[in-house]
Length: 325
Image (cartoon, rainbow, N blue to C red):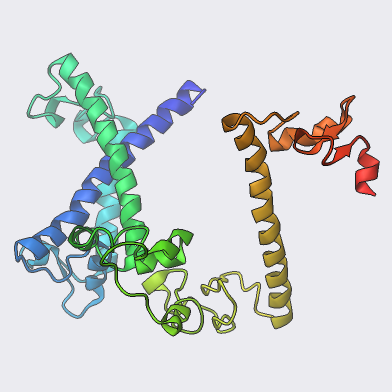
């Protein structure tokens, strides 16, 4: 945002995405809420499944009613969407519509005919509403991202996820859900150390979640058809993901697996080595010559050399060549 033109463009894009996200969150929640708690019947109330109804024999009825919008052609929808949305975007970009409608108005906050309730008539109220709009819009964008993740991980809509969590918040949440076991190591603590927790599954059942054809897969319930045949679940940590086909050759797969595991072990040691000196220096008062990991090595070029953990009795190094040798 250092460049004023770029900042204005980003701000415009953020606000437009925020408005769409607010509409989107409402559109994702409303049909599912009405179907679950008000008994309103829809063909499919869950947002990420609803669009597929257009490919069914009867087509798609908006809100379950053929009298609102009845669609059977994805091409017709595409054409209408291009025309309607393209026209709206053209107006926004050019600042005017046919017949001079909207000419001279602000493209982001046009007011006038676009504000029939007069919410922006008072400048102070208008300034406050703009802040509320962008704050709620940002929250809505994060909410939509959450809906996407929930859909991939659980295969259920946000209302159903929320209802399951409220019914049993300790057993159904982001840390203990069986679906999240394939994404986060904290799932190992699921249902443990809590009174009334479900009994642990048999070892065979646990292993089936990690090995074999019934294991957790990288797209959760949406993984069907995306797992290559050579990834059988024999290797630990195999979630069936190899879109580039790098492991199609067994010898190459074995070599990549070996390299991955060795790098992973070094990385675990490396993260511990990067964090420990800085944590001890900051919170335990332990003195090091230089606790920050990417600066520590340069001490070897200093007059006194490098002392490991600041103690010459551990490792004292003054020659880079000696270390290399």
